[in-house]
Length: 192
Image (cartoon, rainbow, N blue to C red):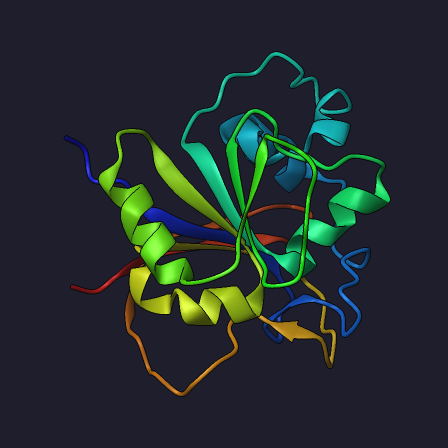
């Protein structure tokens, strides 16, 4: 059986923020050569309301079959008039207060570490940790790979890549890709 990885695949500013103080993400570059390349490589990470724009309506999943996210990452889904941004993936939202009336989205109120460990034992492809920073901080010890889409923007404040207790964790650089848009994709693997 193949070992499923937990991959934190996320956009970030140069100063390490994944969203603004109120969860804003509109300052990230949503057009450019990086978007075309990344959408082609990981079509499953494009939400359903944008898939037609990128010509991905019938695209098969390439790397992930499951997505795990926190409440703050999930909430923009509701603002576009749906409860399921990734119906082509198994979806888990970690929240103690959220209730969702959608059978394709499972809310997990407790123990995200236990959830991820259970998912890693199941058959399937990799697990996408979509965000946010608080959940990533809780799952730091379970993250096998980081893929950071670093945008050429300084935010000054916002939601950091990781929040939580102080726990220095080493990752090994694995790849760097630069795009004409100014976005750099940095890939790191967890050290054993």
